Image (tube, rainbow, N blue to C red; front, side):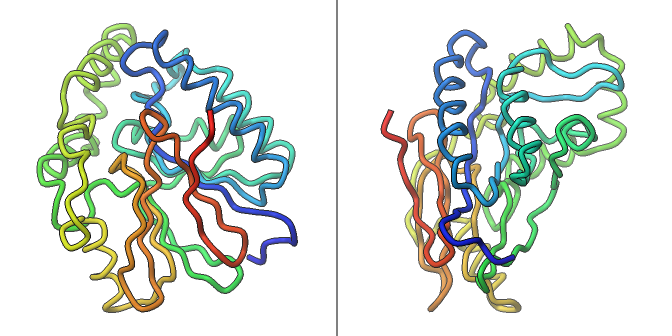
Length: 252
C-alpha cells in the first residue's frame, strides 16, 4: 500500500475503557473520541491494537451496552472510507463477528504483516509472544478454549459480564499491571520476540501494545520494535507518515 501524499497511518492501543468503572473511564473515553476526530482529517488508515475495552464478550444476540459513542465514531470513520484495522487484546479477545458485521472493521486474532511505502510491518497486540508473559500464556489457553467460551456464553450476561469485569480490574495477571515496568532493552520480551523473527524474515517495524509502556528499541540494523503505550497513564500513539514512524503523546 502506498500512502497518499499528506496522509498518515495512526496506531493506538490499550484504552481499557470501562476500567476501573464505567464512570471513571468516561474522561478517557472522551479524550480518545477527540483524538479520533483529529486524526480522521489526514488518516490513510487507523490501527487499533487491542484492549480498547477492559472487557468484551459477544453473545449470540448481545454485546456489552457501554461505549456506544466509541462504536458510533468508529462506524462513522469506517463509513467515510478510512480503513480501520482491529487486533484483539487479552481483554477483548472474545470477538466473534460483531465489528465486521456492524462496523465494517476487520478483526485479527494474531499478528499480521503489512507493507506501507515499501516498509514492512509486523503488527499485533503482543500478548503471549516471546519468552515472557508466562502467567498470561497459561491463562490464555483457557480463555481461547472453545469449551470454556461455550460454558461462559450460558451465563446470563448480567452475571457473566459482571464477573469478568470484576476479575479484569482485580486480577493483575489479567490486567497486565503486574509487569508494567521497563525491563531493559535486553530483557523486554517483545523485543526479544522481534529479534527472533528477524532470524528468518526482515521487518522494518514491529508494532505492539499490551505492555502499557511507550518504547522504541532497535532490534536490528534497520529494524525497530515500537510499543504504543496506553490511554491510561501515557496517552501515546504511533504515526507513520510514509517515511518515518514516531511515537507521539497527545497534549490533553
